[in-house]
Length: 268
Image 1 (spheres, rainbow, N blue to C red):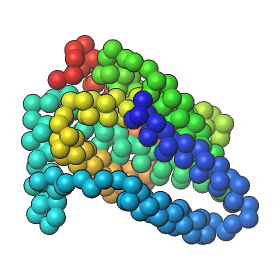
Image 2 (image 1 turned 90 degrees about the horizontal axis):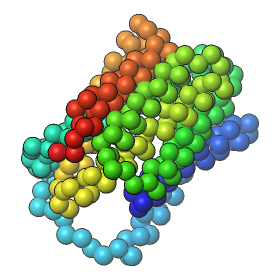
Image 3 (image 1 turned 30 degrees about the horizontal axis):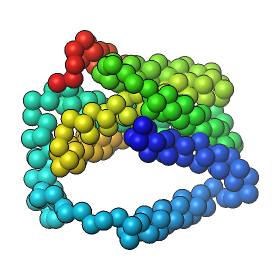
């Protein structure tokens, strides 16, 4: 439940943020949305800084990176903690693939597609992201409060749901259809994020949780980096809708592999 509550804050932000864009774009020049965004980072930094007096000091783990070389050793410790954990290894790679698909399909290709279809309507893309946020939040509330016998199946099903949603986004003929498909695509994310957090926190020692999460960050951001490097070529060859359809295929493939490999047996 706690994982779900923390996760719900960013899901809720995906509703409130685009909603704010829909209100402000009529009175604030588009360039100053960067100013508004900068201010939100400043407020967040102040809020986090104010907590330092309330939190007890925690000793750093022995492999906490302090120099450039330490970062590689810390990452190596994460891979060592994953040795023999086939289930977690698969999902860390799957998170990388689907994070690349999420950024490429929703943040980049869908934004380009909406811009091409409605060049004078800044609020249209905000509505798509708001619909995505609604799907995120609804799914989060359901998954966080549920007790599933097999988290493996939930994670695999979540990626299949997202894949179906992205397929609908690629084929959507108008804005309402695109919003509905985005809402469906979003429902799959909490179905993978929350179970993974539970399995990570209950299956590893405290220090290993940090180490494994480093591996996840490298997997996700590394795959996003590669996807964005390839994005100009992909957009040129298949167009924005084709890129979203490709991202749908990546979600469906990782979901299907999850079912075939892990859904019939407990996580290793």
